[in-house]
Length: 355
Image 1 (tube, rainbow, N blue to C red):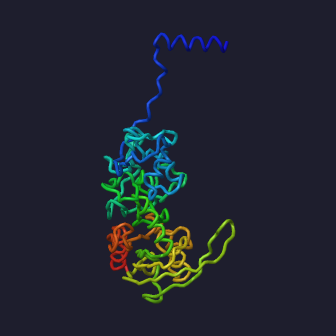
Image 2: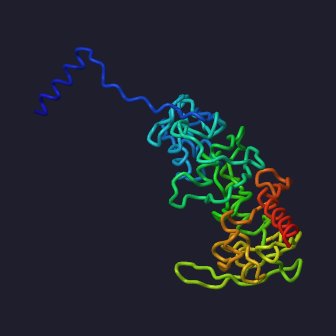
Image 3: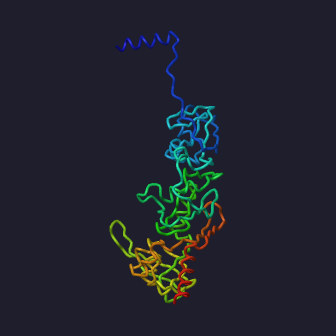
């Protein structure tokens, strides 16, 4: 049998049959642009693509893993085609490094027929990051609700970066770098590039981002301004331990109410970032729970009458150093939500008419 196969192969070559065709390399993906073209004349000979990257650009590719990762991400082109880790680069070949860049939208082929899960307002946007306004009742990340979360809605609201700095790369879709409670509305910072995501996450971890919230409380605090230093229990791996938490607050105005003795518009500036920190400090320390807070309002008659309009807590202000533009300080603020003013005005008018 083996002899017969050899004779057939020799006969095929003698008769001029073409050798089997090698499948062409995968075409380059959309949404990439050339950021570097390498001089392959300095190579000693046929060299595998990852090793060629290390030899030709050791600053970008100091390790084999980084070079292989670039090939797997379709960021390397060899003679106009996507280079694979097993491809050989020969002297005279055109080897290019391509980075993800501006496309018509973040909605790639699998998203084009889909609709946005809900509309988002954009408070600020540039090529590196954006600040969007999360509506109340929507989680930041998926919580078993499919696409009805901020992370799924963000690509429909933002434009891709028009440019990417050397050494950075655009994310395939923008990512929130912190979170708000599902019931809380307000500003959420989203990164568009890898460097922006890493640096913004670091700034939040190091508490270098200033945040201010507005809330409406049931009742009025004893002091119009002050600092709350009270531990909050935090559960880690099933073990609950108290963690320090600090909140600065200032009362803006107090209005009378027939349903509750009074309602207070207050501003919070958290100095730490514990889960439900503002909600627990308002209810447990100030003894004035946030309007609509079904977890901490105590379930009294006055609290129950306000629950149907949701939680009255909004992240209104963000301030931080721009992660990708040295020397630029970013400040973003949104107006007080309309439902806050509506509630305070309605309760004040009703009290004046019926009291």
